[in-house]
Image (cartoon, rainbow over all chains, first blue to last red):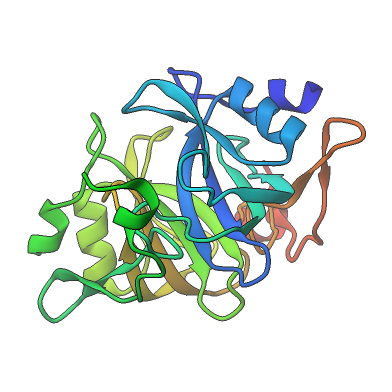
Length: 129
Length: 129
């Protein structure tokens, strides 16, 4: 796809992808794609990423079943960040929250405090650690 | 602020910050902060970033007046991405669009197509290039 050649990938060939819930508008997560995982996302209609820590491709939900169905893909003005609107099945966060941004800065204490309800028990989804 | 020491900054001391419109939920932009610009954002209540291309600090809206008033700051599960909910004054994008993600992938052609209306004329805001 010609449009994918125009993106500004970083030195490791990666581009950050923000995933937004197409229904609620909430920001679910951010992860990294390369050209191959972006192509695979477009081909299958489900989000695929490159894991920097595990150095491998992964499809969101491949372990949990909590996949993301892609509605629309946007690129920003600098062509170095992707925004994907998707339907989230289950919880986006591997810690069992609907979205990964469940901790909020408490200005009074300077600490991060949990500001959301856990949707699912990670142990039930991924097994005990 | 103790919470800021717990974040995972990259090798250059940076952390990506997604800015979301607190009223509409739309994702406005993504830019990079370091600990100092994050502290300055918290202190002033307005978003401050580190420009990788210009290698300098910048406050969003310092040239255009299109500042962002911070409502809430969130951190993701891996502590390596920030989400800020803010009120956007004017246009978030330097190209004059309300948000930077104004181009959408057209699956049929594989091209990026403009999918939003320009809010302001960049030349009127920043002067002629």
